[in-house]
Length: 256
Image (cartoon, rainbow, N blue to C red; front, side, top):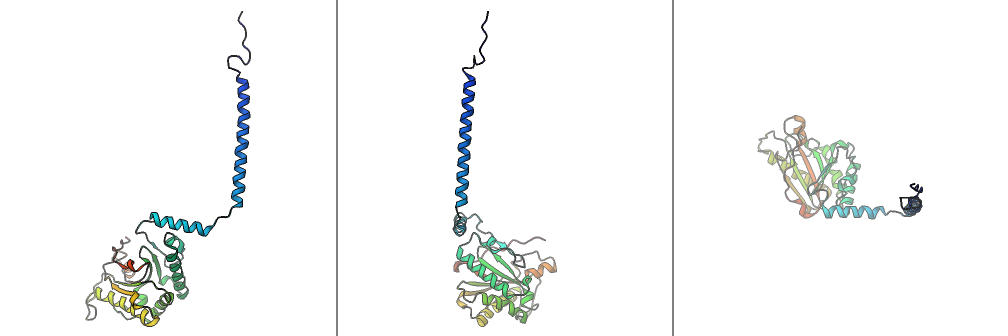
């Protein structure tokens, strides 16, 4: 007659091993719980140095060029987009200078729609549409334009940065004795702005330059009156360094 197997037979004492396994899991789970509580307490007691963290982040971004070598940001006409988003990868000195200039210009201009700010690899650009500064076909500064340029001149009062003034036109031809083409008109307007900053605000002429691009650097297709008005502009570029004033490629036209 065959013998009956015990409850624990054939399993090598399985019941005993299962109980041991359960005790081990309980001990392990207690250890994990204690470690989690320990790190939560350590985190609660710690205090992050935000300034150092941001400085490290900016330094790494510059070192690894995570923004791309030709990245840019165009502010809306109201200039309400935070400056930090545009210059978080720049040097701390550039960031502070550009922030200060933008704040001063905005504080001196009542209608924020009359100016735009652009930050790119060259530096900070303060952009005015030509009808704010000049009458059509003229390179004489309008009285209303003086207030715009005064805001920039006062913001740059103590700056030692190099500044480049760039004039742009649309593709409508001009042919007068004074301005045989848009080259002469855009260059004359750029020079008028440059002279105003020197004569009225004492800007160092050794740190200023002016340039006329004619109609050959449009931002938008010259297909509508609205687009042509946006292409007629004067850019005051506050350069990052003296070497940043070299020629750059034409901007990519915004299709509309």
